[in-house]
Amino acid sequence: MAKIAFVSQPRDPVAAAESQHGSVTTVLWELAVRIARRHETVVFAPRVPGQAAEESFGSLLGICRVPAWRSLHKALDLAARGRGLHRSDPMATSFTSSSSRARSSAETDGSTERPVGPPLPSHVLHWRALQEIAAARAEDYRGAKPFPHAQLDGLFAADLLDQAIAEMPTGARWARYDTANERKVVCSEVSAFGPAGETLVHALNSAPFVRFLERLTGIQGLIPDPHLHAAGYMKVAPGGFLGLHYDFSTQQDLGLDRRVNVLLYLNRDWRTEWGGQLELHSNDPLDSDTHTAIEIEPAFNRLVIFNTPQALHGHRRAIACPPDRARLCLSWYYYTAPPVPGWAARGRKVHFVGWRDPVRMAIRALNLLCPPILLTLASRIGGEWREQRRGK
Image (cartoon, rainbow, N blue to C red):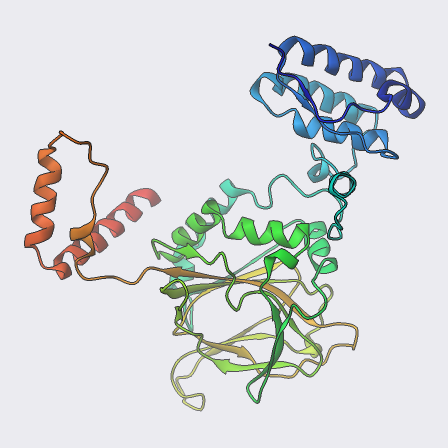
């Protein structure tokens, strides 16, 4: 039985391709259709009326992802590059055009789509390089003064961050904080974000990034907040500020302890005289001789990571940028589950009926007989030992 599923047959693709790019494009289309029918595994992307041939090819290349099609995908990609069918940005290749997806969906269900920008990159971050950064910077991070922190520059594609800035939500979706201690607005509704903002949020809430944070900070069992409680887009307009403060310590809805903050600054060509420098302070009195503090510029494409909640920070100086500018950042908070006495005694693995595992029975007896404090200590020692082995 044939398994080919044509979502929407391209409208005269050969004729359109010939008019755009000549016989090579025609051959590629015919080759794709021929092999699709032979292997019976490919779903063709729709051809939207008025869509350019290169977008149509981008859709085809982006969807030919199953293993049997990798060689075809590579051949088509190379040929398309040779004929100039892709954008020059390498991060924009092999993706269905965002605008094409939006137009196709709107035509199908009649709904109004959110504004979309250019195609998004296949990888927001280079995960392997990120793990190498964590290994190289872990000691410096944990020993940093006045409290553990790090700043990493240039991790993201500049075009992606520019798109995230252009897509910032508008209207009443922003929570306003206007008191004697702070003046800012925050948008935590991911459903209101554009494609770039949504992609960034999910990337930094993903398992690879959490593993990076765990290796960098030494804090195991970090949990991202899918609700972005009090996080997300942060905007401080001229005259705004954030007084020195300690963060809230728990996420009440999830019952978790707050442990790590991550801030991604989105300020193109920011000038020092505009203010907004992030201040990190030690916990002794501000007028003490032993008090230490540093300032970090909120520069574009700068990622700042620091432990919390026992971290005194803020940006006290009122923003003095032009009226059409603001201090912008995206923020994420990460948590751990609080230790619960006797939790280890309640834990158990998959148990099949009729099977008695002597090891499991021994562990259960040990959990019941040992005080919780000993189990917690053993778990902590085991975690440190595993971290040392991972770093070797």
